[in-house]
Image (cartoon, rainbow, N blue to C red; front, side, top):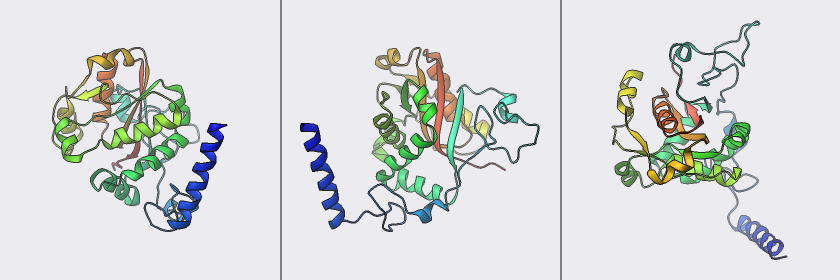
Length: 252
């Protein structure tokens, strides 16, 4: 009975709020049906990553040949060196409106985008999230956390945990032990940048051991950060690591 009353009150309150403050798309600022929705015009500018993909890292292949088994194909990079994570997938190509949204999210304090990103990831990667045990965001170093005031990956991970019902390990999970400069340069430079940069907090080790980890990051650039995090998680006993990101950088 109490739950019903609370739900009714919440629904009426939201309806009243919509009359005073009509829901707007958080990106285009145009009117939408309900809070949290994005305007239909925005979807035209979002370039989803779709099959055929590399089975492991999720990079999109230009075209599939008729005889190609797209569920078991590996890219040249994964054939040359197997990533530490079991699987990586990204929602969008990192370009245009998606790039603008992520940059404003990270550096423009547009934290209201976190539940939208999380909702899209939950819809697209539901099977991967459902099959995992624990959600962990890629950490930022304490110095950068002070500068930025929040970890954008942690915000997404928290919303994913709330929606999926999975536990989320934040401060006592994987930690960044080395304050690295902003990621840039080629793959070799980025690998060197994140080498030995992560560890697992002693209090979080029992929550990682033998678990299937869902690792959350915002952008997959070269995969060096996700690989380094995955290697650390596996060293501390994780069973598998599935890496999920909002976007992936296109490399021609």
